[in-house]
Amino acid sequence: MSVNFNGLWLVVFISASLIISVCYAKKEDNTPKQECKLEGLHPLLIITYKNITISADKITIAHGERVTVRCRELGRYKLIGDPFLQCRNGEWSGKTPSCLPTTSISNYTGKMTEGDKMVMKKNCEIPVEDNVPPTILFGLPTGSAAIEPSGALAVFPGSILHLECLFARRMGNPEWTWTSTFRQYLTGWAIASSEKDWKYRLSIYYVKSQDSGVYTCSTPKGFANSIRIHVVDVHCPTLTSIAPPMSTRIQGTRMGHKAEFECPDGYRLEGMRVLSCQYNGQYL
Image 1 (cartoon, rainbow, N blue to C red):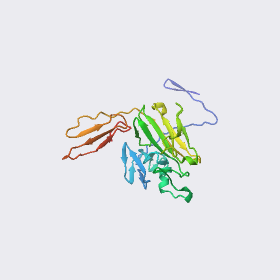
Image 2 (cartoon, helix red, strand yellow; image 1 turned 135 degrees about the vertical axis):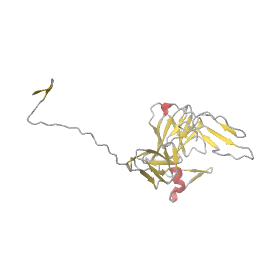
Image 3 (cartoon, rainbow, N blue to C red; image 1 turned 45 degrees about the vertical axis):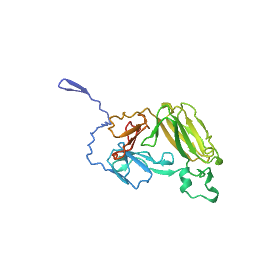
């Protein structure tokens, strides 16, 4: 049927069963959103909020805001839960995180049977606990690195990086796997006599951005621990105008480099004695 409205013709279709869909504008919800609280946290967790590390036992965060979580001592504890938590009207979006001890920690604090006594070799304690994730340590023969709030290891390009999986050699060989498809990596037991029975190493020589990814060490029983590598070229501002009589020793401006400050006898240093260039290009 056609209808004329002041010269404007409209065509209207009518059927036996006419269904009309109508859209209504959603009324804006002005109800105040609830804050979120983090309390009773695992004592080994480090919370970062807006690039600031928070060490309080009880934390209140506004709706929509996000915090980043990691465990202290990178590689010695395995994070269980989500590294990113967002507040959504009084509830956290992710699972509340905690820190699980790995081999090097469990050997000192865990209960062991008579057959699981600590093995001693040249004053080094070799991890013998095989029912927990392995410890992962990192070493930098050359280059520099810094730890990000999420627990990732930010590494400066061109560095030589060793990842050490701590596991008793007499219990079998652990296995290194990785998500990067850039190249294959050398893995094997450390050569030094003091390390060859408990350090299973993965080496990355002259790291490039394509080496970024997750590196996982798994024990023969299937227990695993991972470390995320983020290769990034970050520099901090050059430190200038150091007023005498203060003296300073500056490694450089690369991420991971440090600056040390010292006052002569008769003066007192106010502020930080050591500043480190962080993952975000700022000194801390």
